[in-house]
Length: 304
Image (cartoon, rainbow, N blue to C red; front, side, top):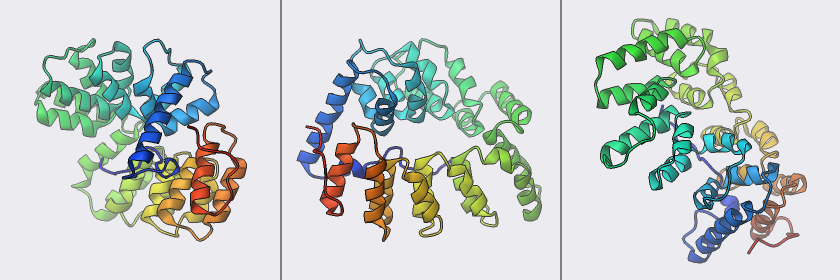
């Protein structure tokens, strides 16, 4: 299901940048956050920063015990989990990776190139983890043909087509070639409530089925700031008012929106975000960004 989306905001941290000083300061800050985590409680502010800076997970000392509440953050940044597991195999990280069909595929594919590495779990476990997103299961089947696994994929798609958005889409693709365009569109619309639980799928459907009402598909982006930004960038001006309202709750993502979309109301938006931001870890970065733009005077300094 190809659709590039930014996995974390960059602009608020001065990125991307060719300035070695900026990169060095950011790298030092990551290390400082990792050290601070060993002494901090895993409160809402810390979890927000980890969601914005998932690279911190790669710098945690082995003695740091991950809080249970960090699991949902890890699940949104599986690329970090995969990299950590590649660096040093860990049975717990393997269990987290199994929650993602996409990264279960990437792990299996990586193991093909690194046969010396052994998993704590059988490869079959990761093959089963691919099934909730049949696209990745089919990708693996193409690399490693297995008639029994092919049957499993088809069976899973059929049984879960009314429960799982990716299975619903896979089932639709299997049927669509025998349908008229109008019938295929009607078939998709019958599954709309299920499809709306999947922001990536809905974002792709706009291009595949431009006849569909994209205002309806846009609803899938709510509570997903990275997809809110993706919609705003793809359809300039069409969803900006809603995106601005929603991203005021996510200051780092609002800064990314301002940097990429350059709305005329940028000064007012940044001022509102600054007023609402209560995360002491994030406020200095927000102040620094605003001071560089010259829109609102800063009140704190960037962490050193």
